[in-house]
Image (cartoon, rainbow, N blue to C red; front, side, top):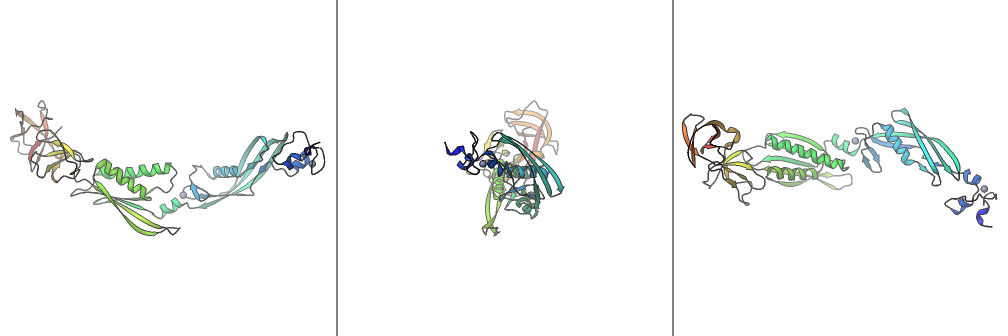
Length: 364
Ligand SMILES: [Zn+2]
Ligand SMILES: [Zn+2]
């Protein structure tokens, strides 16, 4: 006869095929086995810490956004996670029924059923849940106007950044923080957007956001940026905290500007792009212009006007392959001007720009 044939606690014959995961359990008869058996291991109480401002839940030493509609959902989830069903149980089914006691107290009524050693078992119990309200790190930082990085959007020379450039800077900052949030980074936010006479200042919660805004904006609009660090404080762990300023310098000229390049007698250039190096079109011939790599987006040039300064005027006559006559939009006198190859001689009216460099036909 084997050891398993008799229960070591009471001496009764043990049932055939009684199983357990220890040698002692395997030997116990059903009566002794169920005497101190618990189908579910439940905690005495559960405390859940939530952020009173954004509803995030504290798990371990980090905060998580749970997208919960209310604290009941959070309580159900926390209780469910804290419960352990005995490994021997089969055909387990369970349900929880929250009873809201007051705003921060919930009684969670739990019902479990399962089959152990062929015996159907039912267990009912109640777990009190306390909701503790705190302020998460993110909300604390937002409330305290925390920022780790400043982006200064400025332009070179006389001009200030265009509304297109400043709007895009704002948009990029939002896009970057949203994508960081989407990957679970809770400390990404835009602290402040401030319009200044000389451009735009963005205060950001993270230096990564500042760096990416500077990089992306100059990729799209040209120009460059520099960064500088300032020691501001020490954090909770005694580490030094630096605030990083990214100073963006957008190029002096933008698409749509008409410029006269120093030491170049090919005539004015309408700027088409300043990404990488300045590119445009000659207003005298219609030929493409491209600044050398060394010059990049900053040629030594003076601005004559912009495309928006152009006026529509009458095309009077075509003189030859290189010249046409148009009416001067101010004096209405007929004048001979250069004929760029983009000019369509079938047009009755053409846009012209009158500047220090004379009268030039623009592309329509
Ligand atoms: Zn027994
Ligand atoms: Zn919060």
